Image (cartoon, rainbow, N blue to C red; front, side, top):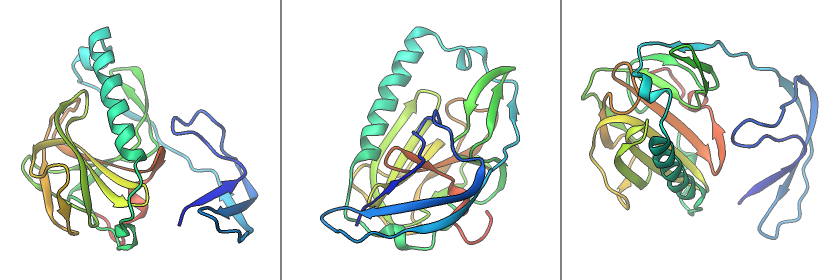
Amino acid sequence: MQLATDGPDRDCDGDRDVPDGGDQRVHPRLLQGHRRNVARDLQVEQRLYDTDRVNGLPDETVRLDPRTRAALHRADAEIDAVRRKYSPLTCYGERFVWPAHGRVTSRYGQPRVLNGVDGGVHWGVDIAASVGSPVRAPACGTVVYAKEDVPLAGNMVVLDHGRGLTSTFLHLARISVKPGDELKQGAVLGAVGATGRVTGAHLDWHMNVGDARLDPEILPLHGP
């Protein structure tokens, strides 16, 4: 069952303003022929983010040349198309676990400054770990994307958990799965690495519902 909401929203690039706080009335509308209307009053709090400053990156990975920008644009379009696909899986109902164990070094939503240059917003969670450490499925799902040498991201896997919810894993040292593979929670899908634009070995874990980004850190019950 899909939901749509009436009221304030934001696009995936964060270009729209979100409420600064206070009471907000949300009106979910059930799609696919359902006509039940539900209204709830929610207290919305402004979330604050510390700036994440990263230095020591190769200059060519910060100031991208036209050829790299074009390759990045093509890769982004391909990944966006995969994330928009809808599947009937219900793996989203599982209690999620962390895909790797280590120290969280950068959090979702943090503004980034790369080599002193505005680097946008970090839309994932970075988990520092040794190269070769296993990366596991945080919940069951189907592999829908697995490619090496994706611009900036390095080796990447996208796992579909169903109903538009996906996990993306960046900077892998190796990929152990292929598109179409069905994974159970905890199955190894690759290894922590330092591929793409990085200063050290870590896993960058992203989550999306279609085009909308989610903070992966709110899903697991315990820390990594």
